[in-house]
Image (tube, rainbow over all chains, first blue to last red; front, side, top):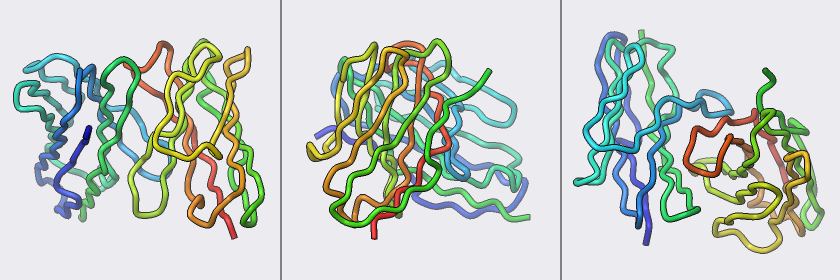
Length: 110
Length: 113
């Protein structure tokens, strides 16, 4: 059965800490992995990863994909309270299948 | 550029009724996706439309249906509403099918009493 598992489920840190979020998957014919940040309603796009080993970076956020070990990590350095959100990974696979992970809830306290 | 829009923002129905949710994609986007986010659960893929055709659907019963119009806007219909259909319904659009960045709308909060 195709599945996407994110870990940890929940994370509480203080401002300035660095966090690493994990998205592991088991799907057939992987196509791409996308990371989203969901604060209130609409998830906002962070990164799209299709190739192994190539780091995508945007400010304090970075992400990398390992297609051999079937996971991706999302790193956030020097966390701020505004980083508090649910972080979701979305996998597209086969020709037309999509599956979201369960998400990691990140809370950053001052 | 306008983003993905959804209407209504909130919808309250009673069990057994039908609900219709609407989504307008970003101009130029041809793919529309529907997701359900029930309380305490993650985003569940519902339906995917591209160029007016249903490309794929998630593990939802047939009373969840929809369509995409020639202008690429979309409707999600939920028949014979059940209490557990209460959720946030999110619509997303992308410029090409599936494997590109999806832009999400603000969602419709459906409450079934």
